[in-house]
Amino acid sequence: MRRIAGFFLALCLSCPAQMIPVLTRAYDNDRSGANLKETILTQDGVRTKGISRITTIPVFGDARGVEAQPLVLPGVQTSKGLRDVMVLPSMANIVRGVDARTGEGIWQVNLGGPVTGTTAIDSKMVNDKWGVLSTGVIDPDTQRVYMVSWVSPDGSADKAAHFVNVLNVSDGSQVCSPVPLAGAISGTQHFNSMLRKQRSSLVMTNVHGTKTIFFASGTVQETGNGAAGWIFAFDVATNKLASALAMSQGDGAGVWMAGQGLSADKDGYLYGVTGNGSYNGVSDFGECVFKILYQPPVGTTPASLRVISRWAPYSDSARLGKNPTLSSPMLPPSDKLAGVSAPSEAMRMPVNGMKPRAMVGAKVVNSIDSNTGKPVQLVYPKIQAQDPAYADEDLGSAGGTLIEQYMIYLAAGKDGIGYPVNARNMGNTQPADFANMKANCAKLAGPPVWLTASPGPVDPCPQDVTTLNFMPWGKTRHMHSTPVQYMSPTGMKIFVWGENSQLHEWAMSPTGTLTYVAQGNEFASSAITGSPGGMPGGFCSLSSNGNKPGTALLWCTVPYGDANAGDPGTHVTNGRLLCYDPDNTANGTIPVLWDSERWGITFIFNKFLPPIVDGGQVYVPNYNGGVDVYGQPDLES
Image (cartoon, rainbow, N blue to C red; front, side, top):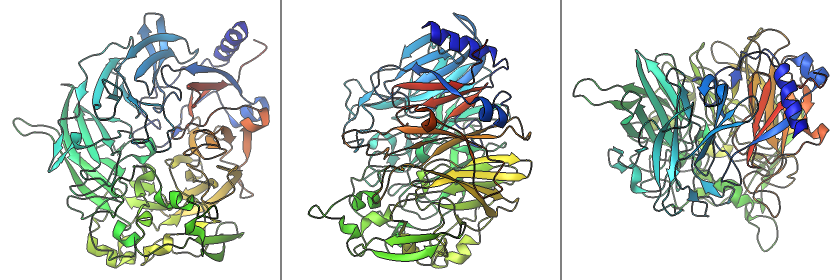
C-alpha cells in the first residue's frame, strides 16, 4: 500500500496541471477522439521516460467492469473536499464517483438490479451482467451526469426496462426519479415491443439556451418483428423525454456504432449511422448515414425529431445480389442477434471437422496493396445464392466523426470503406439511386476509400456490391472504432484501425479527399491465424497540446485474440496498449514510442472502449473489473 501511495504522490507531483473536463465520449460532440489540451505527456517524455501502470481503479458488482467510458468533471466540491471526480458506472448498475487523480472512492450508488447475461441477449457470453451499457454525459453547469440503465426486478431480460438516470456528480444522489423509456412510440413502433440494447453514448447540446440530451438505441434481435433503431431527446429543464424517433417502420436500422454516440454540430444538428435493415429514404433508414433536426416544444406543439438528410451506399437487398432498389425486410434468420457478424460466424462453422463450408471452393485472387505495393490475396468465400449472411454488412458497426471545419461526416462499417459524407447536404439517396452507384457516390464530399486495408484495384463503389464480399488474406477488416481526427501543423489527419489490420493514417483535404500517409507494423488479433480472424480491431485516442510540434501522441488498445469469442476456454482475450508518434512518418511507418508488450504488462481487452488521456494520466478500461491508470511517476520525488 505504501508503494502504491508513493506512486500516486509522485504522479501528482509530476502532473501539476488541472485536468480537463471529459464530459462525453471521445471528448467532444464532433467525436474527434482528441484531447488537445494535454500539457504533460509529450513525444520526448514518453520516448525517454516511458510510462508505468500505476494502479487499477475497481468497479463493483460485475466481472468485466465498465462498458461506459470514464467521464471526468474537475473541481467538484465533495464530502472529501474539492476533487476532480471520475464517474464510473459498472454493468451491474453500480455507479462510483472516484478521485480521478488517486482512484480514491468518494461516493457509490446502485441504480437497480441489472439483467443477467444469457445467450438470448449475448451469444458469446462476454458480459455476465447488463446494466449501464452506454457512456453518459455530464452537464458542467449543473454538475449533473445523465446515463441510461437497464434494470430488471429478477435479472431476466423479459422483465427489464430502460431508464434515464440523473445524478449529482458531487455525491451520486438522484436528482429525480428514473425516467422510463418504455412509453416511447414512433409511428407503428413501440420501444417496449421487444428487447433493446442501448449501447450508443449520450450527447448534450445547448442551442439558443435550450439544453437537450440525445441518445440512440438498437435492438437485441436486429431482424425480428418490431426491430428498429431509435433516437431519443431528453429535456434537461423538465427531466422528461421530449421526443422519440424510430429509424425504421420496417426492420432493423439499429443505431449502436460500437458504443459511440451521435455527433452534434454547433447548431444542434445530429449525425449518425444505422446498421442492417430496410431502406426507403422516407420511414426506413437502414444502412445509411443520417442527419436529424430536433425541434423543441413551442406552446402546445410538441417536440419532434426528423431525418432531414441522408446518404446510403447500398441496400441489404443489393448485398444479396437481388434488385438493389428494393426496400424489403431482411431475410431470415429473424432471430439474428445484433452485433453478431453473420459472415464471420459462417466462416467458423466447420464441415465434418474440416474447413468451414464458406471456404470450400473459395476463390483466391492475387492483388497488390495500393498503399504499400505489397502483394495481398483476396479470398472470396463460396456462398449460396441469396445467402442471408452476406446481407449483414452493417454500415453502422463504427461511429462516425464530424470534421466540422470541413462539414464532413466520415463513416466506415464492416467493409472497412470510408465514406466522406457532405454534412450540409448528404444527397438524400433514394432506392432508385442504387441502380446507378457512380451517381450515388458522386454525392459524397470526396471519393470513398479502402480505409482499414487496401485490397488493390478494387472499386469501393461498384455497381454490383456483391463484389465487396471478400476478405484480404481470408480475414475481416471490419471497422468498429470511430476514426480519430487531428488538425496537425500540416493539415487534417485521420487515424483508423480495422480488424486483423494495422493502424492507418490518412490526410484529409478540405474537400474531403482522403490520401494514404502511413501505417503501423502492429496487427490487431495477431494471435489468430485462421479465417476470419479476430474482432474488433484497435481503439484509439489522441492527446496533444494544441497542434504544438512534439506533443501529439496516439494511444491505442488492440486484442491479441478474438475479443468477441475469446481465447480457447474463455470468453475474453488479453490486450495490448501502444503509444504512437503520429507526426514522424517519413518512411511510411507510424513509429511506436511505448508498448505494454515490451514491459510484460497484461490486461484483459475491453471490446469497445479507447484509452482516455487527461492531466498526464492514461486511463484504460479493462475486462478485469476496473480501469487501469498509467502515468510518468517521478520516482525521485
